[in-house]
Amino acid sequence: MLKNYFKIALKVLNRNKFFTFVSLFGISITLMILIVLSSLYDSSFGAYGPEKKLNRMLFINQVKFSDTKGNHLMFGSSSNYFLNKTAKNLKTPETVSITTEFISADCYVGDRKISLIKRYTDVAYWNILEFDFLQGRPISNLDIENANKVAVISRKAGLEYFGNLSCIGQKINIQNEFFTVIGVVEDVTISKFYSFSHIYLPYTTSGIDYSIPALGGNCLALILAYSRRDFDAIQTEYQKITDGFQFYDPESYNHVNARALTYYDSIFQNPDDESTLIYEKALYIVLLLLFMAFPAINLINMNVTRIIERSSEIGIRKSFGASIRTLMWQFIVENVIITLLGGILGFIMAAIVIKTINSSGVIPYLILSINFILFFYALGITIFFGLFSGIYPAWKMSKLQIMHVLKIDKQ
Amino acid sequence: MISLKNIEKTFQTDSIETAALSEISLDIKKGEFISVMGPSGCGKSTLLSIIGLLDIPTKGQVLINNESPLDYKDAKLSAFRNKMLGFVFQSFHLINDLSVIDNVELPLLYRRISGSERKQKALAALEKVGLSNRIDHYPSQLSGGQKQRVAIARAIVGQPEIILADEPTGNLDSHMGNEIMEILQNLNETEKTTIVMVTHDESLARKTNRLIRLFDGKQVF
Image (cartoon, rainbow over all chains, first blue to last red; front, side, top):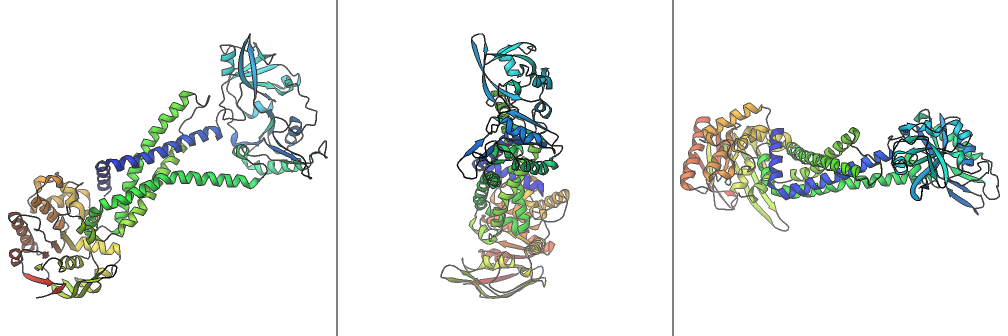
C-alpha cells in the first residue's frame, strides 16, 4: 500500500511541475529560514563560546532607580558600587562577577589608530566564563589588588595590533596608556553580549573611584548558580537585598527595581513591567507559528485545487473499496512525502546559507552550525506540515460523491 | 442475490426536484446476466450506482445477499463493496499514473494480502482478458478496447460476486464491443458471476438473460 502511495506521489509531483515547484519552494524556503534563524538563536542564546555555563547563569544588566514622588528616574546599567553592595552580597550563588559593558577603545601603533573594544573585569569573570586561551593567562587577584596595567586580548586584537599572536609581555597602547599583554584568547562573537570584547582589563585600572556611591554606571553582574534549581532562591535573595539597599541621597532616589534574570530575559526584558516578558514571548511564539503556517496554508490551498484534478482517481478508489479513512491516509502520506522532500531541500539550502554566513564574516567570529536537536525539531515541523496540509483536503475529498465525480470525468 | 424494494431517487436543485427513479422493485438471482436499457436520462446509471452502493436512494431498500449494506458505516460499506462488487465504466476510468498491473491490483490494495499474491492475482485477471503481455504499459499507451479489458481485469481481480457494467462498449467500435461482450458472457458462464449491464445496444442486450427497460425513471417491462 505504502509503495503504491509512494509511486502515486512521485507521479503527481512529476505530472504537475508547477504545483511541485510552488509546494517544494514554500516548504523548503520556510524550513531554511527556520533552521538558519534557530541556528542564529542557538549560537546567540545557547551555551557556546565562553558562555558554556549559561544554563547556570543569571544576569543583572538593567536597573531602574526612582524616588517615591516620581521626580527622579534613572534607567540603564548600574554602577560598580551598586552591584558591589547588592549582587556581591548574594550568598546563594557559587560566585558573582562584575564587569563593564563593552566600550570602544582607540589603540595606537605609532601613528596608526586601531578601533577596538575593551571591557573591565574582575577575577570571578574568568572563573565564570570559559575563554579559550591561545597564549598566557587570565587576570589574577594580584593584578586586581595592585591595579596592574595588564591586558588579555583577543586573537583579532593580537593580529591587528601586533601582526601575530606571540605578543605575551608586549605593550599595547590603549588610549595612550600602556598595558602589558598577559593572555590571548580566541575571538568571541558580538552576539555573546556578556563575553565579547577585544581587550579585557582589570577593573581597578579604569581610574574610577569605586567607593563613590554612584547609582548609574556601565556595569553588569554575572551570577553563577550551583544549579538552575537555585534561580528562584537567588532571585528572591537579590530582591531582598535590593529592597534593603541604603541610598546615599534618599531625597533624590529611594527606590530600586533590579532583577537577576536569565540570559534571554536579560536581553529582552522590560524591567519596568515583568508581564511584558510573557507577552513578548507569546508574541514571538505566535509570529513563529504564523510563519510556519504560511507554507501549510499554501499546501492546503494547492491540495484542495488538486482534488478537483484527481477527483476521478478518488471516485475510482472509492468504488473499488477504499474507505474515507484509507483515502485520507493516502493523501496524508503523499503530503508527508512532498513535505519531506521539501524538508531535505530546506536542509541543503540551510546548510549552504549557514556556510555562506560563516565564511562571509557578516557577523564577526560567529560560527553557525546545524545541531542534531535542531535537525529533529525541523524534521518534526516538516512532518507537521505534511499532516496538517493533508488533513483538510482529505476531509474535503471524502465529501465527494463518487458517481458525480466519475460522470464529470470522461476520459 | 440483489433485491431492490420500492426504490426512489430524487435530485434536489435550488427550486426544482427531479425524480430520477421511482417505484423500482427488482430481484436479480445469483448468476444472472441482466441488461438495462432506456433512453438517455431515464435513470439507468442512477439505478446501477444504487445497486453498486455508490449512491443512496431517497426511499426504498437495497438488499444484497439479504444484507442491507447502505445501513453500514463507511469502513464496513467500503469493505462490502470491495468484496462483492466490481465496476466497469463506459469511459474506463483507469488511473493514468499507474501501469496496467498496478491499475488491476487496485481493488486488492484494500484487502489484507501480500504484494506477491496481489501481483499473481492481477496477472491471472489480465490473462483472462488477454492482456498479460501489456502489464507494464500505461493507460495512455493502450487502445480503447485494451483499456476496457484492463478495466474488466480490475473488476474481476477480487473475484466479486457481482459485476456492474455501465455501457462498457459505449466508447468502442462494434468489433471491440463484441470482444468485450464475449469476455463478460464468458465470465458469467464460467464463473457464475452476476452481471448487471447498462447498454444502448439492443443486439448486446439480447445476448443477456433478461432485459429491463426504463423510461422516465420507471421500469416499463
